[in-house]
Length: 158
Image (cartoon, rainbow, N blue to C red; front, side, top):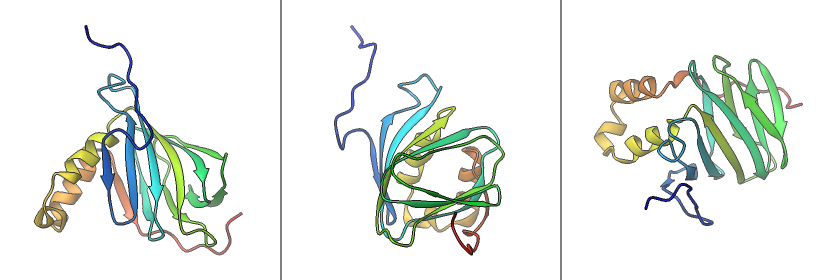
């Protein structure tokens, strides 16, 4: 009999180690029948997520440890532990660690699911693929990632 639930232990689930973060998929697209993906992201000192938007999915971030500065729809927001930020489709956003922090940890919800599938495809690419701008652009569009540029300059996080 197939289980009607999923359970993931600490540091469990499909994980993706990148130079700037280490992500664990806690609820996959498969687990939720495509409704949402839940991930734990452990951010390293080099983490910076450039300005982008999603036209078909929303993102929710819940900060567990550390502090992050989000640029959302032109505003800078500092998110400390316990903060929750929901970004609906179509809203440009970027994110970096706050100046005083060298790491952070957050939960991320993607609705509908799919970001976990993007990471799985990225992890399966070789160096040539990862350095091919057209392949990377096509993959981003496939998963509703519209890159808009680097992290915008910030005068002051509020």
